[in-house]
Image 1 (cartoon, rainbow, N blue to C red):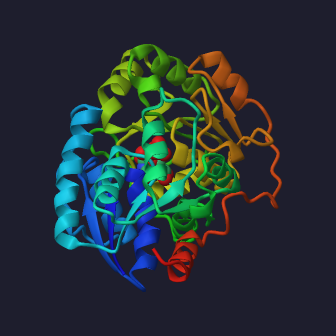
Image 2 (cartoon, rainbow, N blue to C red):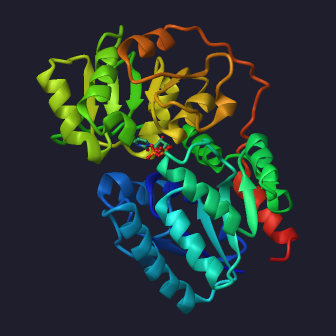
Length: 356
Ligand code: UDP
């Protein structure tokens, strides 16, 4: 088949690294980068480091409101699809790029394949929730990462299109964890950072936690009071606020860095004392690594991780974060809700078996 894959944001590059490798063994893939994430640290480093094929199209669409971004993508993607006339369109996750691509394709009667289908937070106040729901309902094939996600799809009447394949991020995680680690972590001024022997790893970039000073200050105060430094890999959108709060507040136990590459993120995860994040992807990776995670949001993205204190929800409040960080975790090594790290191959197996 000729398959157009659309990516646009960091977590999608990480998934496409595993997906493209497997797809290209049997199919012709045309890769489209919408441009949603576009700079060196948020995009190019992943293509280079993870061996993702260069995009055939780069639409250069970033910024603006949700409607502006999604609308511009919809128009540009329709043109690509009209020109390429693919047999199918494949999308990952839940970004505006995912939704725009699915909508453009379904209206042209091109079958949509959605990887990481069925995740639900249960609230439309999360901007990605509507992207997940609409994309799933536009799709011909739904590849769920977990049984829980498949259950949600069945509950919405989509069971006959659903296949549980495991989490494709786990494929990438296992691959990069097995490679040697040569850290290349940079501070805001580009200076190389030495990784301390003991450290906490943190990412935090959601609007709820970083849109104003107060929640981020609370999170930083909690991290600053810990028994080892925190490496905080800062999303470009919070850079100014994080720098001001840390430097202005004398929070010297926090090491601010530029976004790190995937190998660095995987190995920081694997070697951290504990992880604090509001990233759905990183909470899963903490789970794979067996490292305890505190997730700063009101609802879990991956409920499967919320067992034995391996992942706990916290409010963006210092006391709550510290209380959750001090809890012990239990690990059942036989509990593997995310599959076996061969999701990409399982997707290809399904594509071989079904007629679209
Ligand atoms: N990640 C990375 N570098 C960083 C921060 C995160 O490579 O500086 C990786 C992380 O390991 C995970 C993914 O990016 O695999 C998560 O992406 P993001 O937080 O942007 O998206 P979300 O998980 O919130 O959808």
